[in-house]
Image 1: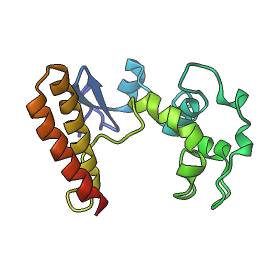
Image 2: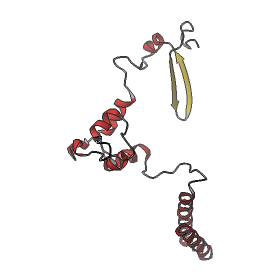
Image 3: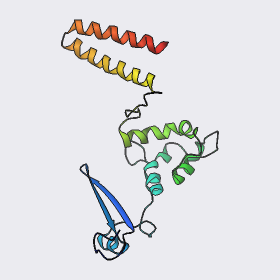
Image 4: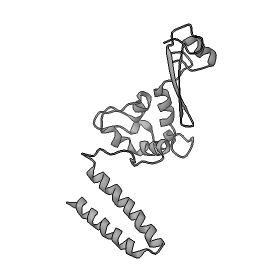
Length: 173
């Protein structure tokens, strides 16, 4: 594929920009990227995803206050693999699955800041997500129940209450 800017050299950099929900792809050569001021991976002034993650991991959910002032980073270690939080923030990857639990106190504010919540609200597999789907359905029914109570639709609220009880019994089985 040739460069979309100059049309002469082969495109070596491929950018995807999403602005206001609109996806635009650029395929350009290094020379045109330098002219446009785009970041080129491997160049001295470029950044890596690991350095981006390291920057995010060093701040708490409230603002720019460093977490290191709250609790020493070296004191937090995964007991299974021995990885410290400092090592994780530099590498950007966990050593094992138990790291999630070991670093949860520091990760939860970060996840909440990035995603807006610490609970999963995406798609659920149909085969293995039965209890999760049931919990979601109960939550939705409870909110609908409260709405019906507020507008004094007590008959509909009673039906919803019974439906919630049936679902809760299914979950306990």
